[in-house]
Image 1 (spheres, helix red, strand yellow):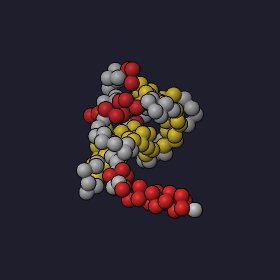
Image 2 (tube, rainbow, N blue to C red):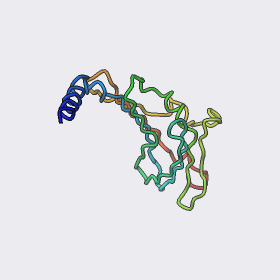
Image 3 (cartoon, helix red, strand yellow):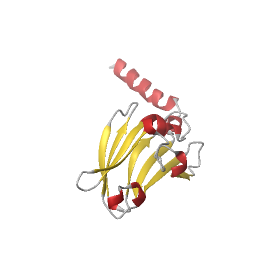
Image 4 (tube, rainbow, N blue to C red):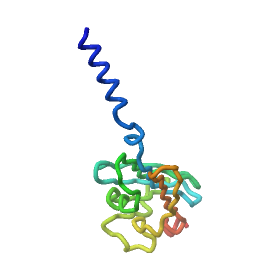
Length: 151
């Protein structure tokens, strides 16, 4: 019985021994793609690193989807290099499943509008009142990004 009481006291003491706010604070960094066309677009996203995943999202006209949420609880500045390390490719498909366009990290800067070029993204910062930053990046999918038959 005495061991249980001491164990509970030790557990409570540990909870109050560190500053939980310091451990809970983190940078919020998100990358969204926004459909600025008049068509629903299916998007296949391939990610690397610890995501090592592939997902398919449907983006309705004038809507957006978060393709890379990144919320580390460590001191990592939210800059565009994170996107370059985490993303492999993004492919756009029409409603019939026909491929319209692919952006691939290995073919960077070969196209007029490159998904992997920071200058093609809008960057929004939110003031958090702390030293941590909330940054949202938005890439607009434009009619010109679709196949000529769909423009």
